[in-house]
Image (cartoon, one colour):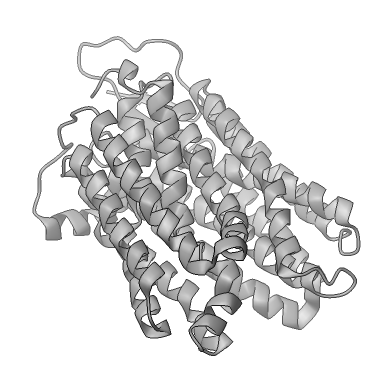
Amino acid sequence: MAPPSEMSRRLTFLFALAAGAAIANLYWAQPLLSFIAGDLRAATATAGWLVTATQVGYAVGVLLLVPLGDVLDRRRFVPVMLLTSAAALLLCALAPSIGVLLLALGVLGVTTISGQVLTPLAGDLAGDAHRGRIVGAVGSGTLTGILASRTISGFVAGAAGWRTTFALAAVAAVLLAVLLYRAIPPLAPRTRMPYPQLIASVGAVVMRERAARWTLILAATGFAAFSLFWTALTFLLSGPPFRYPVAVIGLFGLAGLAGVLSGLHGGRLHDRGWSLPATGAAWVLALGAFVVAAFAGRSVVLIIIVIVMIDVALQTQALLNRARLFALSHEARSRLNTALATGNFIGAAIGSAAATTLWSAGGWTAVTITGMALCCFALTVWALGRRGPLVIRFAVPDGAEPSGRLRAGQVQAR
């Protein structure tokens, strides 16, 4: 493993910036669908598939490319992925038709996975005592990219057209590729195995580690609750009594930037040995947020309070889940991250679909009750697993003495 000094503050910031830029590529088109549909003379319903194409492509990239982080030289792999995504972004900017744009966004989704490679790489370069903080900082960059991308995209498109958004993102990807190639230190691959065996081993690693399976359940539940809330919030704010336009609704996402700070502090909680207690506290906060949300249907102030509570709670538990997974294996962090990202994607998809159905059936009340139920389910999993299945075992080499006290939620194995 590389020494802890290799993950400097400057490199941590660069990783966070690159991870945020990569994940933002999934969301540039989301607030621009009507602009794009009008410019390319396509139906709005057809334009709606643009987001789906990107998300499906991303799921494929996470499953088929992210595991390569365990067997390839990431100093080359990450810049290559960034340059490939830059080419896809340029094709988006030049797309003459909706069909070409759909294809380009699908390719963009497949290739914009560098953030999912950088996060476990940050875990490799960080020392054990600081891994949670470093992973939290990079994860906060990802969250910033998700929340800020819609606002940035809308402003750029309004000033210079939707194609400019993709063109500028392509330039940024090229610059980041150059900077990362120069900044990432040499680091040998963790393992060597044929590609088919590598992909199959993703499931094998999860099946081998009981703590991974329980953690993935918590993580997917968190993303389901997160997606449920944000999808339904759009319906709430666009209808009576608010009737806000899309541009104003997008600004509510900025309140969620409080989750960025929670990611940084959540990493420190992991490093101090409070991972599992903090996870339980985060889910209690999330439950409280949905309770408050049930009474926030006509109050902007309460809605903003709920946004902050939910983002702090769910982003904190997401960071702690990732940090604990990375503690399971030095050799399979990219594959564990693949399993985590896949589970999160499935959870988010279920949350979005549930929000649409619940809104039609029972409106905001049905959504908040379901959110409370998800939180109660997660708290049940946490309570059952905090003294057993969620406890992480880590290896101490033969003849070595453990340094410091054992972290909460971890037990020493020899």
